[in-house]
Amino acid sequence: MAKTPPRRRKPSPPVSVVTGGAGFLGSHLIDLLLSKGHQVVAIDNLVTGSTDNIAHLAGRKDFRFIEQDVTEYLYLDGPVDYVWHFASPASPVDYLELPIQTLKVGSLGTHKALGLAKAKGARFLITSTSEVYGDPLVHPQREDYWGNVNPVGPRGCYDESKRFAEALTMAYHQQHGIATRIVRIFNTYGPRMRLRDGRVVPAFISQALTHKPITLFGDGSQTRSFCYVSDLIEGIFRLMMLDGKDAHLPTNIGNPHELTVRQFAEEIVKATGSRSKLVCRPLPQDDPKQRKPDIGRARRLLGWEPVVPLADGLRKTIDHFRDRV
Image 1 (cartoon, rainbow, N blue to C red):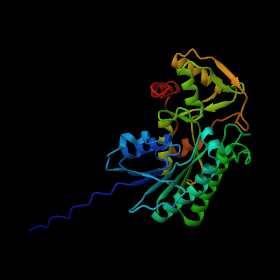
Image 2: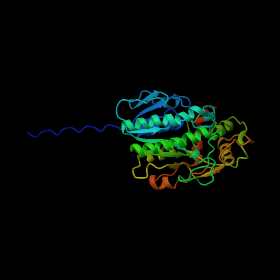
Image 3: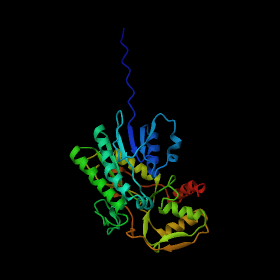
Image 4: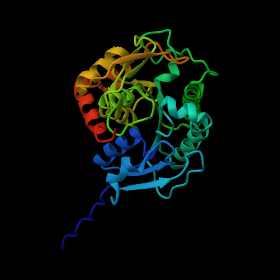
């Protein structure tokens, strides 16, 4: 009698840990990971994140939420395949109010998240920022530009926390052989942004929806490049999954379509049908005059570039905010 061949075990799903998982970007990443079959553990102390962003995941067997400060020791049972370190205040309002916490999550928090990746043999990704370029003297900003940052200015706590986080990530890669990834995120917008987090998109949309004056800092001639959140998260996912000898080097992910802040405000007024007028206020110290990513590396290595038009992204974002103003 022929023997019945042994039944093959179903491969275990990959396990991802997302710090800052209840935040704007972290929660969108979790949605993508779950759609791709990952088991996800989200860690967040809810200082700037909100359980509202992950409430739709309650009861799922492939999702677990831990309320914890990432600067504390991280211990998890079982295997971990990927650590996505998204935890950090990320808006001027937050990091001006929480400068020490911002520095701690960039330093101690990154150290703890890297320690978890090292202990588990996991791949690690740090979400850095275009703010590492400071008020740039090079335009557009390429990854080999070292930046123009004021370490003791009002934005220094955020800028330097991310620059330190990049350096620590690179040190773990070089000394411990961890597969690390560094993504430099440019201005991103979409649903789940906090209404009053101080960033330009929710500020302009909330002012437009209530027909209040839209506040421009300076004369509005400074430039920004806005990437819709689904485009950003897709680029970040591709970077984490990238193999190759240069995968550990910083990669810009953002939309290279450059607008002045005044032009962007006018787009929002048009999209909302608002009666708001534009008003000017003094420009904050160290506010970047230009911001535009060079995404040649992402195009070349990841086959990635943004696909969501500004008009479509704004419509989805405005719809999200209509019931929240």
